[in-house]
Image (cartoon, rainbow, N blue to C red; front, side):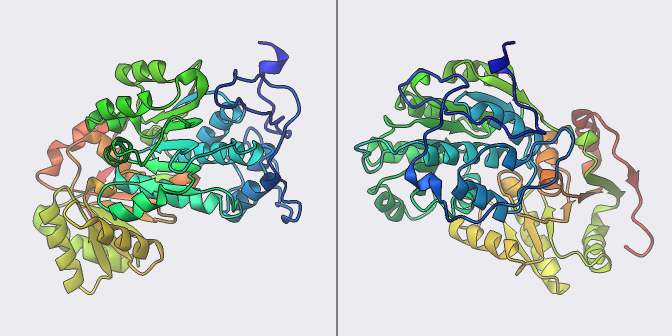
Length: 438
């Protein structure tokens, strides 16, 4: 490997170099950087530099534009997670990345920081048209797309010239259509709603410079790939755009898609096996189905839990459980597929703000929803798909924080437990509930 290809040490400031522009050859490290006036922000306050840690990258090790660096700092981000540091080494130089990362590892910030840094450094293209996004982020669900939009707005809070828009099903169509009549820098969308707007010519994808496919494995499993292929065909070819693809798994199908859609992509694999996740304490309580309601209520009361997500498999079970908690005086709310989208968004926001202590949900909340400081995840019933167990407990212990997962295993759940243990390659500690909880 030549010296120009080596990654800088995390103990020194990274030599952040210009990435390629759309329809220009990929640039190699070297040369002067040219920033747009919006990136200068000479009056921006100095960002505090975190102490060095061996083998760990800091965000200040990447020479980010001042407005972005300030946004990152104000969100409390000092040290990169592994997926962030490994991805940014490639994406900030204009390279494509195929990343394997489970939920809660910080991949959203990784691709958003790269996009925002690029747009702040490079001059806006001449003649940018309304409804023609420079970056397109595709997500499989409304919840994930809206969460990405929220994260993007937070990171870009000091980059006043960056326009961020979402286009998702289940929300006000006309409002989204009106937003697309203006210039758009970053568009975050679900496949169905995006195709609808594209077919009606409200969206022009021919100017996309950066394409992100988030949770590609889930798009595949939900049958979205034909729609995604149609969308990608409407963007510039892979030699003329930068592409990031993230997935929780690297199946043969995912790797085939990655090969079709990316150019010389760096493969970044830092997915965390939950069997070795020291930041999540996993407990399993053996209990009869009849005793589960009282166990949950007593657990919430005795441990004074106030930031808890409780998962059940079916909508009617979630409804019944919510009624039980309300009767016991527990401050709880629910989200499931039968709850209208606007109400789900409102409920999630109340939970984020601490107005709701316990959120009862189906697996509609198992992926793509980032809520800081969730202390406990309780599996009231074990999921039938072992992978959903990983995504559920990933709601806590995010980005290195400590968290606790508690699973109630009754008569029906006992059949799912062996499959989950085989999937995570670990034996879960099973015990009877502590005295006094029943």
